[in-house]
Image 1 (cartoon, rainbow, N blue to C red):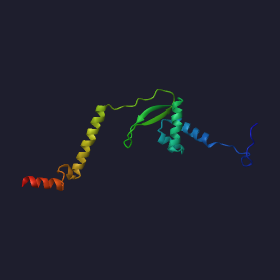
Image 2: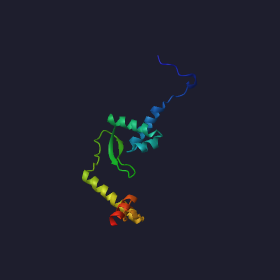
Image 3: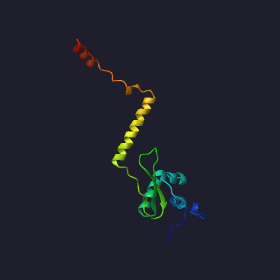
Image 4: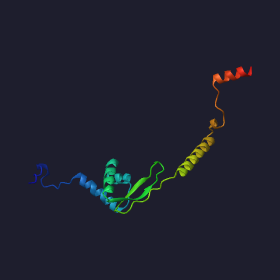
Length: 141
């Protein structure tokens, strides 16, 4: 036998927040493809909550990864989800050679920026310590 509604809720429709948020999440996913951050902003749910929901929907085959987005501020690519059970988009993995080339290029750019900023430590020798100066003076004498 179902429990009677509390006296303050008699005559009102009871809507559970969890069901409402899940409905909003599904509505947005039906409209297009979203990242977890975008879904969190659209629904008002916390980012971690959206991560849990999307991860479980992905495991159950409700969502698939339609593409990977590379943001400049983050190291790892970001998943973009879409409703459906299609195969996931391939994630581009850098080879060791590509990683090395990227590292050398960044190092070269940093050196150029330091040179342009007037960082003279690139061209000067390191100052000698007093001990090495004293030993050189003794050797010279």
